[in-house]
Amino acid sequence: MIIGNNRKNFINMNTKIIRLTFMVALVLLFMGCKEDEEVKNLQVTQVENFYEPGNGKSVELQSSESAMLYFEWEPARAEDSGMVLYEIAFDKTGGDFSKPVFIMPSNNNGGSNYINVTHKQLNKIAAMMGIESAQQGTFKWTVFSSKGIKPVKAKQERTLTVTRLAGFAEMPEKVYLTGAATEGGEDLSKAIIFKEINEGEFEIFSRLIAGQTFKFVDGTAGTPRSFYNTGELLKEDGTCTISTTGVYQIKLDFTTGVCTFREITRVSLFVNSPQEYIDLPYKGLGVWEALNVTPTRSSTDDRYKFRMSSIVNGAEKETEWRTVLPNDSRPGNNPNPNFYWMRERDNVEQWTNNEIWKINWPSPGNLNWDANALDISFILKSDGPYTHTLVFK
Image (cartoon, rainbow, N blue to C red; front, side):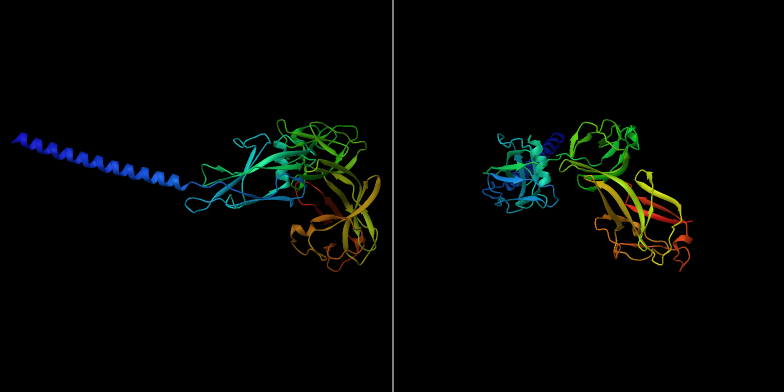
């Protein structure tokens, strides 16, 4: 009796094992089929035709932010009828695109069969191809289509000839002024930062000492990249000097490789009527300042702005610094700091409506300039907006 029960239990156990094994096999088979189906659904066709640009197109690259080259190709097809992703690839003329020099997704994160490539991006790509600044060279491009994996190369390849910008392919994100000739001296940690005007374009207002060396660097620690000028050309790895001690506006354009200096000889607060100049001596680090100033003339016109004299191409030139925001009023109590922000203008005129400030007099109705001493600061520091202050004593 015991033997019979054991035999029955043994048969039941084997039956359960067989059933379990069969179920596992079915699950694995289903998973395998599903996996095969998913892999199958990832298939896409090659891009057959290119539309733009034409094969062998020649482009002289421009530094403008809006300068672009348009690429477009015939759409590929996906086996699951879904979206196809695209990448445009660039390679040297002798390459086979097995290891492209540069690759990037098309517009809309790879979802479009076209892309706008900026001239600045093409300039970097050309540099990666070994084409020197301001030189002409040729490289190839093609397109890869995919569902995110297993990209398929297009049937076509085209060449593109570009003339590189005279500037740098890899432009610094930040630039500093350092060296014995500068206000920060040779201590790299005290280097003075430039203001970024546009991508790759920087400027600073600072004092330089004649005969002493200085340079431009992209960091204040370690061994940063350094730059210097030869005439108006901006080059890498070196130092430069200035022939006359003075305050300068230095402008660097890494997109075109140009460096310019403008010596600032005079900064004045300009009383609009009767057109009086109140000179502001240079204090340092981009600030001109006059303390405890009592204007010598009286006027019922309380409008003012600033005038700057500088040497440009060997000749003296005068410019004006006026409001950033349209304005022809007093600041009132607790003014927004942007009320005092300013920008430089080339047209020098007495009457510049909506680009001028009015004095916020300490006593309402008192428009007598010579009855009120004040401190004046004209601030062109690189780490903030260009602005000014008027503080009555």
